[in-house]
Image (cartoon, rainbow, N blue to C red):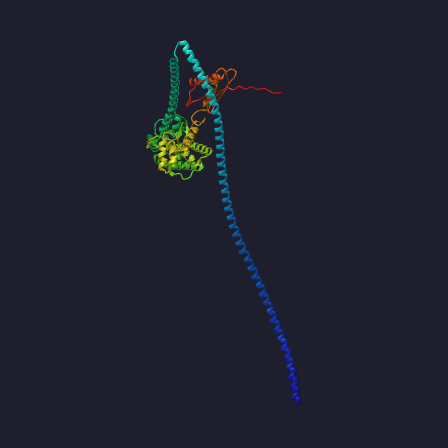
Length: 521
């Protein structure tokens, strides 16, 4: 019994101890698991935070990229709209300018019409008064003839008509003489131009200043090398280039003579290269001339393209561009034809704008009007006819072709642009300094013109204007009457014809003015 109780006590004690040990162990295990789970939870929270931060960054980057794309798209659309707006504004401005120009032209025309109407009214009054005066004079003359010659009225009328007929024949003869003289002057001018244009296309002798080029040499020893053994070098050079090389006693220089300016330029450039290189023999000459010819083709093409680009002309055929480049080496009366063509193009376009026409056809026709001067001897006809044919073959419209063909009045004018090109051509060729006339000669001619006008009695002042094509004379009103003014103009014109040589005609204008001034006090 006692043993049993002891065993029970021991078992109970062991159970209590086991319970406490199990509680402690389970508490420690729970604490460990709790710490482990807390650590896991912290790790998961940290990963979630990292993932959330990465997602946030990716989202921000994506949003920024989307915003940048939208911004670029918006800026492009804004720029396009701005360009369209500017284009529309430019068109509106251009139209406003055109409308203003047309309005100004209409205003000027209206003013001119009103002024002309007033002039016509005043002239009509003057003519009516003169007619009445003439009737009185005729009646007086008739009465005088009847009294003096005992003629009947019918006989007096016949005598008067005979006198008037003789006077009309005299005036007609004077007019015919003037017309013939003007035609002769114009014919001489056109003949000179035709002669020079023909000479430009045919390799014959011409004035030295337009057919020679000078090549400077570093030493006279090179002249012998240029000639070569038994003249083989110079013969090869002349054969390949088509020019003549003149080697004389001129120190440090040789002369290249040839009519064709392009060949002469090729020869000059080739000779300069040979002199600079020092190797002068037939094979080297062939190489240099061939290379220079190639370069000259590029120079001609670039010159034509630069002119077209400068004037803003589009759609020009390559053949026409090349022909334009060749004009760089052509001259007419000492005037460079390419520069002259560009000047005519600008003048024609400006005049077209002033008159309310489209300036583009005028600019195009002005640039191409002398294209025929670039042709060689293989084509026949005047340069205007040749230029029109070249333009027609190159696909230019008939408006441009007619303006080219008609700028020297060889064919009828079919459009206002033909008149504009012809006028611009005359302006460019006739302005002072355009063609071969020294400044000193021009000044002397102007001074001589003014001196002739001022040499007559009663002349107060004389001014040569319009580049010497008109002389305006102010006379003393108390010394010259209105009737004497017309007689003075005729005398001055006759004296100018005797003492001066000039082309065309010079207008003599005599101005007489009387002023009455008083003061009210």
